[in-house]
Image 1 (tube, rainbow, N blue to C red):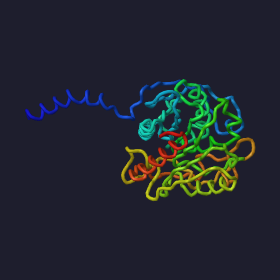
Image 2 (image 1 turned 120 degrees about the horizontal axis):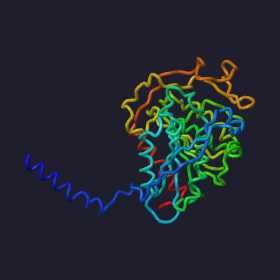
Image 3 (image 1 turned 90 degrees about the vertical axis):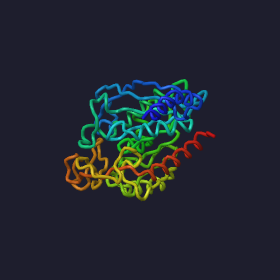
Image 4 (image 1 turned 120 degrees about the vertical axis):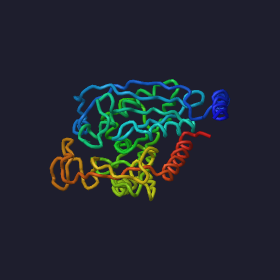
Length: 325
């Protein structure tokens, strides 16, 4: 026991100095918290360009990577579980690559913790407006290169990331004067067909998902990717054969486990109708989360192999895009 205490005491004395001599490259040189003025809107309001929503101030964490001058940056948008562990993991991985991050919290200011069990609590397209507003904030930061900002999101945030690329939505809502250099949606919901949804920004779109995903099935994204490619969009879909939903969250179950109360539209076909109304094609009536096509009990879980592969792929893509060594 005496030897163990001595060893621990020695470690406590040596460790800080050793750490200071060789700090990890995933440590941000500066962290800032920023307010973002936005609105809480229904999907109908968003699609119609109706600005009559409730004003709200959300927050975001800026982590400035190690490096000099204006650095590239990735905006990170969480999913239906809120600011989960995968957001922090991605922030550090991107910081280690010399890329700053701006991670949004779209829930706390709205009094939400999660919306998995009641997706109707917040319009699914609301995050797109939050993202555009965040772009306006971060593009003017003196340590950010406004021409090297990418967008990355997960699940509900992945859906927002994917459809934030639509030119129509930029025209309606993006008043920042800036554009994204790329869009990286992770396991997004592709079950809804929007008007003019093949008219996207002239920027790369890189989608990542698992073939075992029964929350947001990747098959629907395959169909959307086909339509985008037919429209000459720069889009790629990377599939991980053994991965389920939220495969990049290191605190997720292994193997993936059922979340019995989580709502999924995996059995629904939804299309934007007139006047911003989303239509359930099965009933030909306005879609609601009380529709019989809405299912419960998707699987969520961590897949370390897929997570490692995705981290490598995203890092390599962004280093090339941003011309980093």
